[in-house]
Image (cartoon, rainbow, N blue to C red; front, side, top):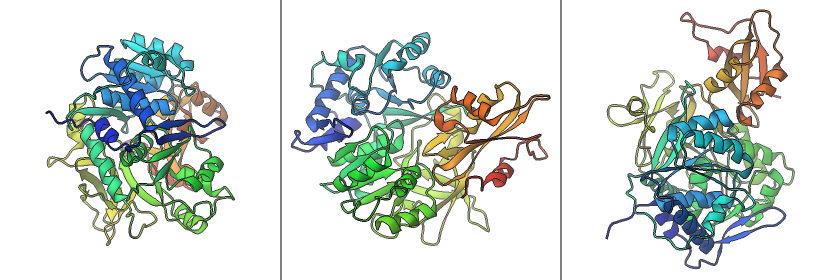
Length: 505
């Protein structure tokens, strides 16, 4: 019998023996309760629908949908059917979505019903064969069509090296690249974290993250599913309601912004967190101030870890042992991490990693893939860091100009290109500066064309119509010229230094 390394099989094998137990509980005025058996049967129906479309082997299924349990089921069904999942931020506008569709060439696109008009036009123009809708109220053509399918399905046989997900990331050029993650990449990482974070049989996860990137979809969902743990499901993060459910849960995963907003809730007390076992933070740097205030307010110490689209998780502060503010802990078991060409004085250097978690390369970019790996097989993360004397990793910056705001990646070149197209703008530079809520805030510095007068609010409003909200600058400055070096390159470090205290109280 052929071994099946399909990630879905491993997740389903971990479901509790009592399949009538609640797997996911939604929140809101009318909570819904999904049993483990519901997850199995619903993903079978969707997988049967997808397989019935006679898609070519290796087809991509793109999801541009809002967070819902059914959206999670779609992801699991794509794995189950043996296709490749392409999660996309539902905030993306037409120009952004068009690139992903043209580059990944999905055979299926699933979108919110409200967006069907423009998404379907974009998809069909690009040669997509099938477009379905999926809404947060359990309606849409995907579920309607799937309801006629059998509720049993034999998962497709996949090898650990087979592609499971394409997760788009980017570089300094702003041109998005698809990181190819295999079934083996994600399963090995999920199993490692299950042990490293000491998941318990009675754990309950408060899930308030988006599910279009690694933190919410892979680290959180895989962790709960692989442990057979119930999830308390929030469609969006709201501090008060989330804090209230800590009394019914044991694990919470969030980005620094969430912790800052929870700290603003006067009802956050040790008593409110009495049932909790573990708070995890990632996707952006956690300020030491937030780390210490959380300890003082709740009696719990946040566990900060380090991951990226190409590697899932690669380091973590310990579950047992000291969790240090301003560090991301040690390399995970089975993961090797090194500092390349460390500076003689500071010890800072490029962070490189290898292990079963490291992706298979960039989608249809073999030369770029080769460029990002060393001759001896280590992946260059693009981050700069150092180890302290106790082996804790400190990330001190990024080799690229990536901005992480509220846990979301913002690529300056993309925002700059959008701003530069606006009337009266000669050129722009987009940077990230420290922000107490978002970790980093997007700031734009503009040079006007001769005779033009630029208004910051007008610029912001124009960008809002073209890009997702998290990419929109929080502040805009108009200057006569941008600082440059002798080679004519804009000195963004000088701009960051100039504005680093912009959002400090």
